[in-house]
Each structure stands twice: as structure tokens, then as C-alpha cells.
Amino acid sequence: MSIDKRLYKNLFGIVTPIALQYLMASLVTASDAFMLGFLDQDSLSASSLAGQIAFVFSIFYGAFVFGLTVLASQYWGKGDRTTTEEVLAVTMRYSLLVGLIFTLGTALFPQQIMHVFTSDPKLISAGASYLRTVSLSYLLTGFTQAYFGMMKVCDRAKLSSLIGSLSVVLNIILNACLIFGIGCFPKMGIRGAALATVLARVFEAVFVVIAIRTQLCPPLRVRHMLHVTNNTLHRDYWKYTVPLLINQIGWGGGVTMYSVIMGHLGTDAVAANSIASIVRSIIASFCWGIASGVGIILGGMLGRNEFDRAKKAGGSFVRFSILVGIGSGCVILALTPLILRVIHLAPQAQHYLKYMMLMASYYIIGNSLNSTIISGIFPSGGDTRFGMWCDLITLWAVVVPLGMVGAFVLKLPVLAVAFILTLDEFVKIPAVYRHYMQYKWVKNITKEKAELQN
Image 1 (tube, helix red, strand yellow):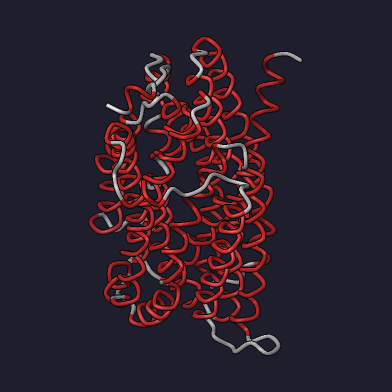
Image 2 (image 1 turned 90 degrees about the vertical axis):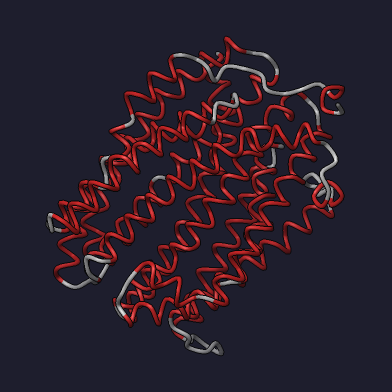
């Protein structure tokens, strides 16, 4: 078997369950939108805007889990299980803390939060009801996502995918039962979608605890979670996580601003943008899975000092990501006629959706390439700062200002504003590829046990 065949066998062994997990998570959002769309367009738009809070939360726990992947993949590849478990404990501390903050915020101040996204009283009222009901899910998600990240590093990606996929199936079934009041369940509308999410997160948490108790995944060292016992490792964790967190906040804040801009352009724009974003997220699941798998595989190589092999593998992954992006774009184009027939929106929203799907088809090509390099290849060797600066400058110095000027100053048509908001992936490609070719990411960032104890 050639190195490429071995490489891609390993990659798909990791990517397939991870991509399935991303896909299933996207299907929950899609089921929310599809089912609430049968109630009324306001419920669809309100849930889409309220769902941005979950997206903002994912920015934080995503950075913490990302930091875990950077460090733990190299220590796991090196064979240091003890330090890997300590990285998990540090990650869990911050993931649970931020989850608690989001749970309290959405439970106590849901209307104030909705005012950030829209000025429509109906959307504020419906969205606040959703946020209040869904609030507990953030704390539970902080726990399960940290463990899912650890499972992927320690060769248990299939287990995390199984738990996540079963949770999604349960979520979709409960969506139908609680939104429409099927059988003995009450008809709760938009609150039913929120409650279904909470119950699905409870299901995930229970099965993660079972996996821990049966030793199917590393234990959580509560002592290390509550008290810093390894200052060197703690500093290393934040050294690589802080740029990732800033990057995630900057990128996620920029994407959230897209929703804010669309939210002030009317419910037709919000509804069309939410459907296009959901479809793009579903199709992009494989791209994001590749980025995660690439980071884990290259991190293991670099932890074992296989530098030349990592360089060769990185080049192969870059080329592969472009092909995946083109294929994903073609899938979006092929699905567009079906989606336009199945999704029932107002005529103006339907018109917007048609062209937003076209924009999604080329956007995903740049997204596939950039996510593989910025979120997979660079962090595998601890190179987390470049991605931070790249995304911050692209979004906040170029795309968001142009989008706001186009929407609120020049009063451009909705589709022209939507086009401006798809430029970020392509603006940064030259800088990303140039940095990739400098190979600053090719390094071993682990320390020996004696160094960690100092």
C-alpha cells in the first residue's frame, strides 16, 4: 500500500465519523427550519436569529476544543496518555464555565439578546421564548463537546459520531412531536423546537458519562479541572488557544454581523439567508470533517517528528480540499431546484433564496480550501496566530464594513449585499497559501515530562 493510500485510509477513518457528526448537527437546524416553516415564516425567522446565540457559544467551546486538539493530538501521537488527560481537564474547565454563562444569560435576558438581532416585535417575542426554553442546552453542550473533541483525538471518533448521531435522530423526532403536538405531546411551536434541543443534549451527556464509566474514553481528572496542577501545560494550552479564541470570536462575530445586517433588511431576506446557510452547512460538513481529520493526522506526525512526511501529506490534503470544494459546489447547484420546490416561502424570499444558493455553490470552494489549511494544517503544528490575523483583517477590515455600507448607506438590493458577504473566503486565499508554503507550521510543540513538571 502506498503512502497516499495509507494516508487517505487514515484520513477517512477519522473524517467519516466527524463529517457525519457535523452533518447530523446541521440536519437538526434544517429540521427546525423545515418544521417551523410549516407554522409560519415568523417562527422560521425568529428561530434562525435566536439560533445565532448557539453559534456564538460554539465559537467559544470550539476554540477550547480546538486548543485541545492542537496539544492533545501531538501528545497522543507521542504516546503520552497522562498529559493528554490533563489537556482534557483544562479544556473542560473553560468549556463548562462559558456554558454556564450562556445558560444564565439566555434564561434571564432573552428579550434583550433578541434586540441585538432584530427590531421586529414579533421576532423578538418568539425568539425570546425560544432562548428561555433552550438555555440549559448550553451548559450540557459545553460538557459533551469537550469530550467529543477528546474522543476524536484518542481514536474514538466513531463513538462520538454514534452518540452525536443518535442524539440528532432523537432531536428530529422530538422536534416533530413537540412543535406540532403529535400523539401525547403538547403542541408547543417554536418552544417545542427548543425543548427538543435540551432533551437531545441530556441524552448526549448521559451516554458520554456511560462511555467514561465503561472506560471507552479517557477519564475526566476533576482535580486537574478544578485546580491548576501543571502550570507549564496550562501556559502552553493558552498559548495556542488564545489566538484560536480570538480568531473564532473575530470570525464568528463577523458571521453574526452578517445575520444582523440581513436581520435589518426584512423577514424575506432573513428567511432566504437562513435556508441557504443551512444547506451550505449541511454540504460543508465533509469539508469541516476533513479539516478536523487533517489536524489530528498531521499533529500525530509532528508529535513523532515526521516532518518530511507531514509536508508531503499537507500538500496532498490541500489539493484534495480544492476537489472537495468543487464537488460540494456542484451538489449545492444540483439541490437548488429541489429546495425551491420543497421550501415554501413568500415569493420575494423565494427569489432571494434562488440566487443565495448560487452564491453558496462557489463560496464553499474557498471555504473548503481555507478551512483545511487554517483550521487543519496550521494548528497541527501550533501555528494558530496567522489564522487569527487573517480572519480578523478579512472580515473586520474588508467584508463587514463593505456589507454595512452597502446595506445601510448605499441601500443596495438584498442580493447585492448578500454577494458582498460571500467575498471573505476568496480575499484571503493568496495570503493563506503564501503562509502555508513557508512551512512555519512544521514543528513539534510537545514537551518532555521533566519540562512539564518545572
